[in-house]
Amino acid sequence: MPEIELSMSIITTINDGIPNGRMEFPMASQPRDTYIIYIGEINAHEWMAVSININGSLKEFVLLGFPGLGEEYYKVVFAAALLVYVIALCGNLILLSVITCDKKLHIPMYFLVCNLSLADIIYISTSLPKLMSRYLLDDKVISYNGCFTQMYFFLCLSALESYILVAMAFDRFLAICQPLRYPTLMNGRNSILLAVFGWTLGFITPIKSVSLTQTMDFCGPNKIYHCICDYSAVIKLACNDISGISTQGLVTALSIIIIPFTFIVFTYINIGLAVTKIKSSGRAKAFSTCVAHLLIVVFFYISATFVFVSYRIQNVSTDFRILGSLQYAVIPPLLNPFIYSFRNKDIREAIKKKFKDNMVEKHQIDVMAIPSC
Image (cartoon, rainbow, N blue to C red; front, side, top):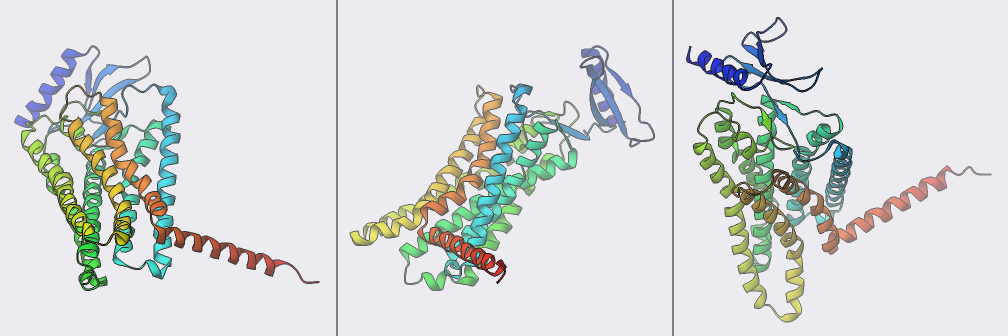
């Protein structure tokens, strides 16, 4: 009975506060424990409704996207998201294929780059497709389970990217600070184990935060002020006290941002000290192998820190906070393949070789296709 009373109190509040509010009991096409609460008339033909079951749990959420964005810009947002998505996918797939096909690049550093590209592809695919659907098809609704699934993969891919960057920093640390032991310490077996550890830890990290959030009662508004099921945006809709899961979210953020970044800073301090002991002729070469990784680290952790801090500052606009959260998920996957392509001599040469081989092969096919007299 307490659960029924909770639902009825919500219904009463909504009906008292909004004119024309009413409740319909479930029909044959709906689950027996489900009710539809009409909370207000939008216009002559449309009603705003919330699907709610008898224990006060929402069945679906509504992704509002950018609240301050006018409808005339919806197609622009879709086009921009589609362009970014295609470029990021193509860039990371090309980087993966080049490293996979060129045996000269089959070394631990580029093996980790492949893992980063694969993580980037999955990462950007957790957010942009739903955003594009939202602004092209006006598909705002996401199911309860679908929302938490997206939240889990978004968080675990964030953690995975961070841990792969840590593994790459560790690889550079061993290569520069322990050059004689590097072939033994970072052999094929150990580099695979390092990657497997990063993937496993990435998928484990958000489990507790997401599972705790899923146990909360979502009995009130179902509007998420975001383009995706962002953790901080979703927990604000819970009817329970959220101090416990907020603390757990802070622990998750520390494990994804602060601890990995601290480790990377520590490794680069040691790398810098080691480079100063190298003769001047070899310093530039030693440090050049770290430039691409350093650029990716800067983009990723500055974006992550902005998202983390913005939710703790009250006067940051919702649209600006959403934009910051999205660029954290979009900018690194978009820029990573280009940074490694333009800043890394080995990959540049491999791409040129691949392009030349394809042109030669195409020319040979065209010559063979010419009929003889």
